[in-house]
Length: 391
Image (tube, rainbow, N blue to C red; front, side, top):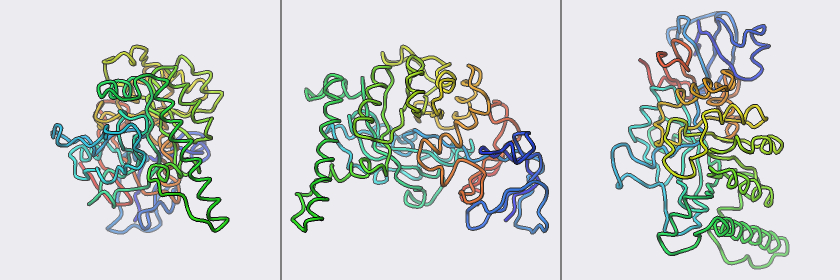
């Protein structure tokens, strides 16, 4: 299938594709088996009835949100539809988001209308260690069909775990205890892995099965990322400290006061999913919130994506959130990367999504104008080569 007569906006090495224009003024994408097989200027040699003429509309990579709770906090369902926090235990890395995901939640339809084709979703931030995080497409008949892959384990620092477990008269009730709970679980998993490897090598009995430690092994091996919920500058640096101590690949989620330590984070080549942007300073940890945060982080060399933290900001306002960051100093091309290729990289799915490039999933957002203009409409959304929304 060809999608042609389109103004195409690839995100990597795009200058060389269009003589420095930053886009392909009129070109086409060939799709085979749900993947991008060709990207080129001009027109296809032969056009069939199944091909799509965009008549000059803009073709962007499908937009990506690297941090949400999509499908775990139900659309208009109240407490019955909430499966985002298993706060009966401070350490629950063995929870699997896919077992709680409501695939037909109404907000997935909102995502499609906004051109959002993929999100990272998972447990909330009540626990020092929550459960796994998964990348999912925003359309599909069931959660298994929507799944791209598991991408991380959720950690949380600061106010949320403190307040959750203070109410339960249980640890942790301080920042020190929160970090200690995380370290204890990681040390235990590290020892458990070492014992397993030693037993296998020496053909001895394996250690007693530990589901929580098993869940953390992919993290220790670098197969999954640690996603740290952190708002305050001190919590951000605690996340970095723990990640470095255990050699974890990590992403900073929210990173609200990142602008206060942006130079440090830049030196460490950190990555941050910044947001929600469209929200009030509704709790103490948000007192240092600044709209310029994403711009200042980018200026200091931090890889930045923009997230909604859906439903804190509803998913359909992802591009609006990025637009406000542009207004506050984030270059527009970086804002576009922040909801496409950077978001994919931070999510750990850059080999599957986030750009218009050969070999990636054929996920596209078709618009009639600048996606950061509030009057622009998404005319069509394509996931894995299939039209899943059309105005």
